[in-house]
Length: 104
Image (tube, rainbow, N blue to C red; front, top):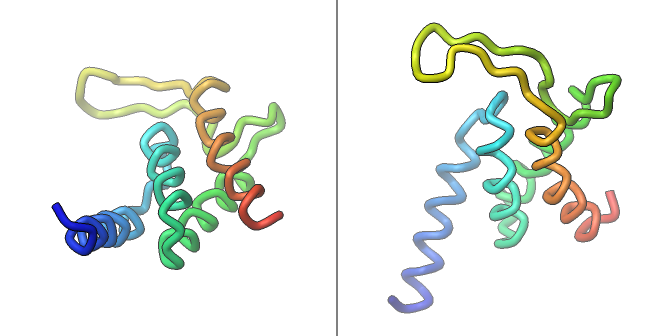
């Protein structure tokens, strides 16, 4: 695969990723944010910043980033999920990466 094709594929992935809401899927969102920041695309970095700003805004009194409340699902193999500090801490790496890149 040549460089041009690889860049085109990555840009498609960035567009797809940026189009996702990702509001409550912390454990899926964290590696996506890391990828967006690593590639450095303006659209991707802006989306990563907005997700991280939202995660900080939703931080609870215990310091857990993003949502830290109990979730109940109607169906599936997991019926109830109570996020732990480990789940929200997966956002720490991309948050620190963003800080290293922007100072914000």
